[in-house]
Each structure stands twice: as C-alpha cells, then as structure tokens.
Amino acid sequence: MNNKSKKHMAARKTSKEYAEVHKMASPEKPSMISVKELTIIAFFTAITGILSQISITIPFTPVPISFGLVAVYLSGILLKPRHAIYSQVCYLTLGATGVPVFSNFRGGIGALFGPTGGYLLTYPVMAWIVAMALNSRKSQQADRKQGKGTVLLKSGIAILIAHTVLYLGGTAWLSITTGNTFHGALALAVLPFIPMDILKILFCIFCIVPIRSRLIASNLLVLDYKQPVFSKEK
Image 1 (tube, helix red, strand yellow):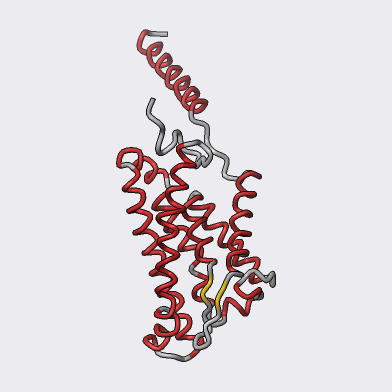
Image 2 (spheres, rainbow, N blue to C red):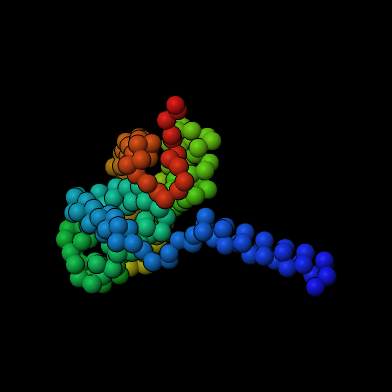
C-alpha cells in the first residue's frame, strides 16, 4: 500500500471518528412527546376549559365575554410553540367530542359550527403566534442579548397580532352563520368586547410575562434550551 492510500484511509478514519464523537455530543432529540410534556399539555388544556367557564353573557350578541382567552395566552407565554398548539387542539377536540369545556359548559361539534366557532378555531393559531414570539429557539437567543424590555414589547406585539386573528376569524364566521354583513358582524363580535379585552391583554403583558421571566431566571420554567434567558450575573 503506497503512502497516498494510507493517507486517504487515515483521513477517512479520522472523519468517521469525528462524526461519531459529534453524534454522541449532540444526540438527536426523540420525536415522541414525553410523559412530562403530555402532562404539561394536559394541564394547560384543563386551564383553558376551566377559565372558559368564567364568562359573561351579553343580551344583544351570541358571543359571551370569555376568560378562556387568558388561558390561550397563558399557554403561548409559558409553553414552547408546538406544546402551545397541542394544548389548544386538545381543548377543541375535547369540546368537539361532547365534553362541556366551552363557555357556559357547552360541548359537541355543533359549538364549533355555531356563531362562536370562529373564535374557538383561532385558539391554536393564537397560542402559536405568542409562543413563537417568546419561546422559539431564535427568540430565546435574541432575548439573551436584548434584555427584558424587549420581551415585554415582543409579547405585546404578538398578543395584539393574535387578538387580530381572533377578531377576524370570529367576525367572519359570525357573518357566515348569522347572515349578517361583515360590518354588522363586527358590531356584534368585536366592538362590545374591546374594553374587557384590553384589560385581559394588559394583564397578560404586565403580569404573566414578568412572572415567566422570573420562572426562567430561577430555572423553574425550562424550555429545553441550553441556558436561562435571564441568568443572574455572578
């Protein structure tokens, strides 16, 4: 065997050894959800169902004021994006199968096709928008550089975008199911809820988001990234 062949074989061996070491150092994460993750998802599904029962009926509109939205934002603020989606999809699935988890203890597939169905169907999207803004890997890396003020700003923008999706979905679906014009549905589906929704949004931004930051800094909330977003300086 000549020197050229020996060098080629040595290079291949070194490359193979490097690949094995790299694989051991960075193992692939399993695609299956762990029992702990399932428990967390189920917890936020339950919270959404519980808070949805805190609702206020308004006489002139079929849409109640529901505090289930706080739970939707809570899942987006505290969970990773896919877990946030799963928690709300599970909530909708439970309701569609007849479990009375929707507002006023309603359940059944009819609730999703009724006047309020447009709101309910936006829940997974809303949770995903907020979770992507706060808890995705790129967002976490950016937060380490930019600080806490940026987190509040990002959460505010994300929640406003998510709420816009809620209003659009709810208004469009209400217009279809009731036969109202879009403007008429807007008066029933959006305008009566703005004052209370502002309070909900402010509560989520200025109460839940700071609590999230403290939980992460204390390692009580772990999002499976390498280090806390706000680590204490030594």
